[in-house]
Amino acid sequence: MKPEEKLALLKRNAQEIVKEEELLDLIKKKKNPVIYLGTAITGRPHIGYFVWVLKMADFIKAGFTVKVLLADLHGALDNCPWDILEKRYKYYEAIIPLMFTAVGADIKKVQLVKGSSFQLEKKYVLDVLKLSTFTTIHDAKKAGSEVVKFGDNPKLSGLLYPLMQALDEVYLNADVQYGGVDQRKILMFARENLPKLGYTPRVEVMTPLLPGLTGKKMSASDPKSKIDLLDDEKTVQKKLQTAYCEEGKVEDNGVLAFLKHVIMTLKQDAGEKFVIERPEKFGGNIEFSTYEEVEKSFIAKKLHPLDLKNGVAKEINKLLALFQKNKIKLEKISQEAY
Image (cartoon, rainbow, N blue to C red; front, side):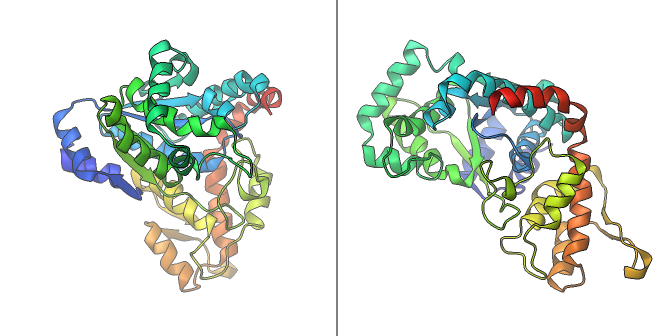
């Protein structure tokens, strides 16, 4: 794969890359660059996580070394109780590899890193303190505003969150950090402030946040907005039936968004079509080769919301089959953690 082809793959479904020319230069000069994504071990992972799992799978295809930071200390800084921190880490440690396997990625090429395995080292802690001397309370709060639950009376812990995330780039030897667009302020904080400690700014890659089933942001804390990875087939179908999906409208449509960023990406890579099964009296089965075809048909009101929901529910259940096979084990770990 040529550098330009790798870049095109990495740009797929991305909302912003800072900076694109730096990423291309990195691909040309380094054989196995390192990318990392951090996920704080707070709420139970849901299907929205497949967006970043798929993007990391793209980086694997492009020859990157992929590191997934299971950020236990970040979870504590964002109000996860200390006494269940290790239990939540165990849940993430068990379920994240299954997500990569479910999308066909080689889990052997994914390194899971526990945050506290290096974030308590003397040099790291000293760098956090150094960075704090360059950072105002205003800037730290601004950087974490889209990610950290500050509330009306912010805790000091939330202000440390973006400082540590910036330094994780250095201590994971990352060339690129990837996150949702809600992470943008932290990623830009890292680029602006790491040089103050003598470190090189990294490339930052962001993908959009998917709307949930209620039309708002998909959230682990709102069961109605998301499909949990352990939901069974009937639960998935029921949640899709009640999902916001106004006929002809694309905006805030979580059903279409998941189809675009996850299902159709998988179909495209596998060379398969998206098939919606319908009774003959309603026109019979209908198939689509691209997401654009689906959206065009939906906007024209040729594709009914119920048919779309049924088709997406079927694909989601295929994706979650692996989790159902491991459900007893995963539920046991989850009950202790949540």
